[in-house]
Image 1 (cartoon, rainbow, N blue to C red):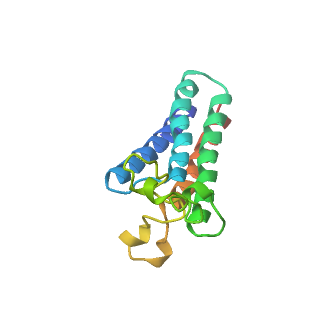
Image 2: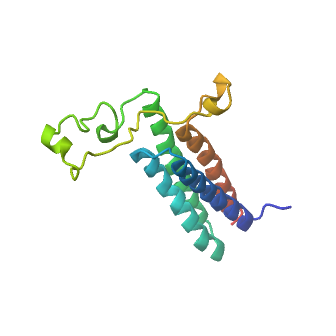
Length: 164
């Protein structure tokens, strides 16, 4: 089977759709996403949407936009990976270093209608591949896997652009 431009576009978009499906399955299984997890989903949504005009038209523009979307989520995933591993600080709104509920009064904390802010912290790892497969070398998180897979998706989009 020859990997034509359209097959590559379809493959890249289907891969982003699979990542999104996996994220929602994990959410359904009890792993709620943090803010940065949501940020990683948006470029995947864009990549799936970009596939439609990319398949309907010729030229490199749309496949390059797909590659940009994949590189965007890979970058966010890499940044999130560093925040999870405490290599660098993340946004104060979703990390343990941020104020969170610490700055709220007792009355506000006891108020059931009060907005307590982000519940899931971006610098806490909720799932690791090594928990499922007992091999320390597989100490990968969802953010790590997204970053690596999205780099591969970007290469697929770039291959489609070269065939335009």
